[in-house]
Length: 84
Image: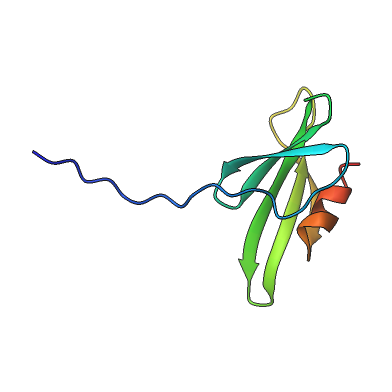
């Protein structure tokens, strides 16, 4: 009996570098954002729109399960800069 597995998109590296921040792939098009000391700050999600790619930033809020929406940006770097 053979097992059929669906191909899963590979997790990719964050498309930018911001001093003082670390990015870890969480899922296709989703990255965890952490400070240099390792504390988790939030997430950045890439979304396709009719106008092109957008990057949505969400900050984690201590003591809550709902993240705070920070905005959508045209570049990954702009989405990340809001965490600094």
